Image (cartoon, rainbow, N blue to C red; front, side, top):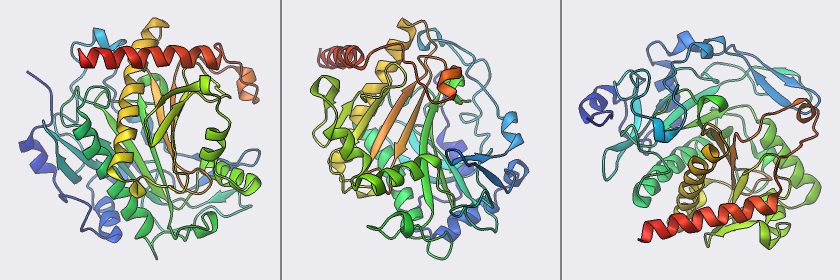
Amino acid sequence: MKKELSEEKAAELIQYSCFDSLSVDEIISGFSDEKGLSDFAPDPVLQMDPRDRSIVLFNSARAKRPHDNKTVFRSEVKEPTTVCPICEGNTTRIMDKAKLSSGFTFINKNLFPIFYPSAGGGLQEGVKTGNPFGIHFLQWTSSLHDCDWHNMDMDDLLIVITRLAVLEKKLLFCSDGIMPDSSRWNNQKQTFGFISIIKNYGKLVGGSLLHGHQQITFSNTISGQQYNNWRFFQKNHSCFSEHLMDNTPENLVIKDYESSILVVPYFMKRPYNCILIVKDVSRQFLSELNDGELLSICQAWADVTNMFFDIMPELGREPAFNILVHDGPGAGLYIEFLPYTQETGGYEQVGLWVCQADPASVAEYMRSKISKRQIRRLS
């Protein structure tokens, strides 16, 4: 019997059917009203490392998160070592739900948030402490337990990323009076607050559940990498996406997806790190992309995650990777794929990264992996 969150159990969890008609006030109230969520709220304080502006948040409750990913390789997975709480419906109420060809995708609240609604101001320039506030979502790629970016139909993945874009637009552009004006970081567009979108897969990189999902935070706090992208733009008068396209030689291009391009960065810190760049550098957010551009992201995301499932066992490694969506001022729009292929040592901690592979060889091998996958799909 396949594992999934059934329609019947989902119906019991529905708080709102979609974000489209909700105000940001209603969305935030949904977090404040969620029973038990405040029990796992983070500490209402942050610190900043003055050396590199890294933001440090504190939440001891996150150590209590449930884990069901004790297995090693995907090919060995029969059943998770514990019951999936998502499939059992033991999760927070749903705020957005969309039908897929099989099952559905949905967005709910993270029970162990790194941000929580509260009064306070954001981190200001030159201030070492601040009062963070915000909200933390989970997007479950599919209600079917074993379905995720590596094995879903493109039409379904397009629905998934479109719902993510709807949420992003609602939060960033409709939060006047709720979140601080972030125009100082972005001269081109009027936005409020800051969004971070990530995906963790595998216990070695922070993933706690096998059921495929993305995480979305919306807060008054700019992350260290968002600040670095903005600082890069201020110094170079061009966004990082444009710089990377202009400075990537042909032999580091993995695949061109027409409106986006997948490359191995010339500064690859760990084997098989790669970056997907949206070619139109005037785009800053997912919600600004048309269906064709969003589809190119889905195609690349599926290709890369499939490669990781193949390549990492070849390296004797448990599949584990992070995916980071870089958007907003100074970034353009790019997605970074970071597999856990090499440990972080002491030299890396002081900023001297020693990578156990060269970018050109990695790019060549990844090109061959994608080519073979396309042949298998056509046959």
